Length: 435
Ligand SMILES: [Fe+2]
Figure 1 (spheres, rainbow, N blue to C red):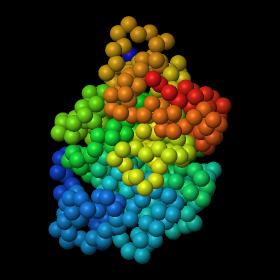
Figure 2 (figure 1 turned 135 degrees about the vertical axis):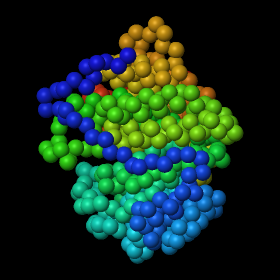
Figure 3 (figure 1 turned 60 degrees about the vertical axis):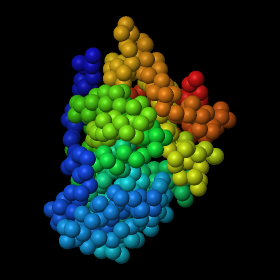
């Protein structure tokens, strides 16, 4: 049902697209391979990054023992902050600089993997912190050269951080969530072991699963790469290059897997087929969004996560209010896709069908509502809060939320339709309640 003109060339648009991806090893038990892979990358002295909760779990012992069995010198850094900040990135960078490591292994969610990317960067090419941070918040200075090898081992089926060159953090001093983006940050290898998800609580599987789902549908509906202005030099082509035929392949399969397995993976930790399926969906969606880029649901999510007042999600750290990343994304998504559907209705209808919606008899005019309805059904059956209002916001917050999302221009510009700051406020209004 794809439109044959979706990638028609446009004047000044980029006719080519690039495929960059981490090397990937996927399968139950593959964490035990960490030592052999690290040695093959030339590592001798390894920084093993994780967070305080994972530090006491078996998965860390498996990775550490494997590295040691391969004859490597291993130092564990278990102080990664969940939802990292500029201060926590800098603390990790100090550890990396002082430790003189020749390689990195990260075991955890996106926070851990992103922190290892940043530590590797600042230890390899020291600079003022703002130097590599996205413009206009930072200087967006290009990373000068290759980083040390990094093996990333995700423990949630969500972020896709193991496949991307993006490191997201809370810039506390500037009150904004932003990132460092460079192909050089992409981990050398991803070691993806679905067994790490077998003990995750339902709410974590739900939130991270919706992150996967949204990576896939946002990348699939992103501005086509042929409509993005070509870079001045080919080597400057951005990593988030817009939808392209390569990312479409991963998006399609990730949406089908998510439609089939998300509810089952949330419903039962014993449903290994479903949890394995969601892990593979996360990998495919991570590859896709690492090449295409996400857009408005993620751009809006940073305003939701950054503006949280008193929301606490079950089974997440309780010491401070927090909207988990996937939850902060998906509460915006039905409103966004109702808005973007007329830019590429075939794609929205395809996504709805792959997610399991019955689209028999649907016209292109129905596309936005069909995909929104399917998302809302999935949110309700998996215990996701009812929209932006469900995580504690009211209509009084609309201007602040809109301003926060508007600051995410890298993502706003990757949407298939132009939107103003006022328009973002209207989208948040539509996202306030769904049922
Ligand atoms: Fe995400």
